[in-house]
Image 1 (cartoon, one colour):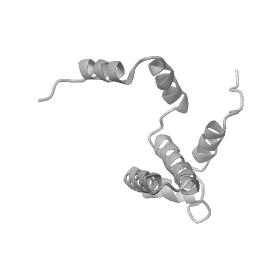
Image 2 (cartoon, rainbow, N blue to C red):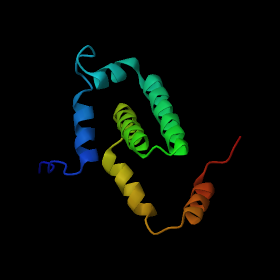
Image 3 (spheres, one colour):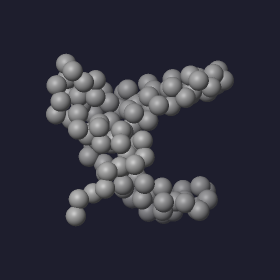
Length: 116
C-alpha cells in the first residue's frame, strides 16, 4: 500500500531533501551538501545552531525564526544523509511524551553501554 503524501511542512521538506540526494550539485544546494559529505553537513548544522543561539541571546525574534528554519533544514539534511527515517524521530518523541526530562535521561543512563 503506497504511503500517503506528507502533510506537515517538515515532512514535505524532508521528502524534497531526500529527492535531491542524486541531483546535480551545480543546481541544488542540498545536492551540494550531500556531495560534500556528512562531516560538512554536520559542520553546517553546528554553525546554524550557534547562529540560532546568538540571535536568541540578542533577542531578535525575526532572526531567531530565520536561523531556526536554517537549523531545521540542516538537521533534516543530516538525517537524510544518515538514512534516518523521519518517522523514527517522531516515534522517539512520542515515546518521550509525558515523561519528565529527568526521568527520561535516567532511563538512557541505565541503557548506556559501560565505558571501557
